[in-house]
Image 1 (cartoon, rainbow, N blue to C red):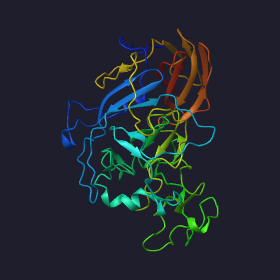
Image 2: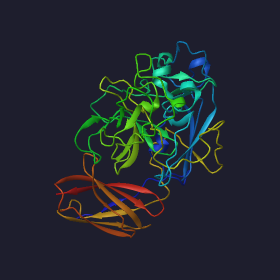
Image 3: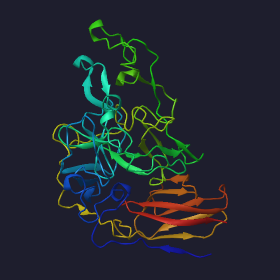
Length: 406
């Protein structure tokens, strides 16, 4: 028997822990410029225990343009978005995704929803689908500028990640403004991380209608609010209301996400996914659904938004730092290692608020919330092999240790 002492790496310049919401951004490495000589990607990331502040110009590092039939030109937006580090599900009335930015890609470019901001006969009933009505103006990266110069993507940002790679879980490519991550088109088949890799399918389908006289919820419209007859000029999909949510028809819910294991969140998290059809073309609702899954904080949405102030106590993230930054030292012992059944984890400092055990595939096989200085894990029901125990202290600090089942 031996005791494994695992002191956590300490940072001398910060009191806040890092995580994917801090480290996943593409930061401009050296004043690089892109379209119009404007600095590209994310310019800085600051963080506190509660929030991350992402500043950007909204100009990507990849080449953009031209935009056929679009008279607008990208311009520096001087954004500062604030993202919560502790996203919470919305248990009240669902919040609709508004026009304009509803999230931010990891290169600082805006995520827009599926609407183009116009409707049939300007009545606000049959709302136009951006891909159908504006897709011809998208560049090769499937983005274009808004009238205010805000470059954005309504659909899969194909130059930001490999949307054709169906062999591994897609990259984390952004965050919605409720704080939940956005991934590319591929994820684990099962929420627990098993079953291989599959394309995440939308659960929205074209309605079986030939006349636009009712809404997706069955509401009958007065004749003066009818939409155009479904035909070659106005095929199904031309309007948002041409779609209906069919629970279970795809992997994703009505918000275009699901709860499950991801590479960055092996303990599981709710996440949105970019959706593509069988031909790997954008599929409605494209990124985030008509409503957010979580609670949306003020400051990022609505007219003139996206210009938050970084608080004085925030820490500037340095992507060159290799140490894991945590709140304070959390020293843990584990014995015996290896074990043929039971292993004792003991904290010599703060209590252990939670312990999660993951197998070699990133699947959570044991989760407990002891809120004590000691916790006993029974590994006897598990197969032999190495496991990763993720321990969270009362102060929010995290340590990962290797546990071996003999």
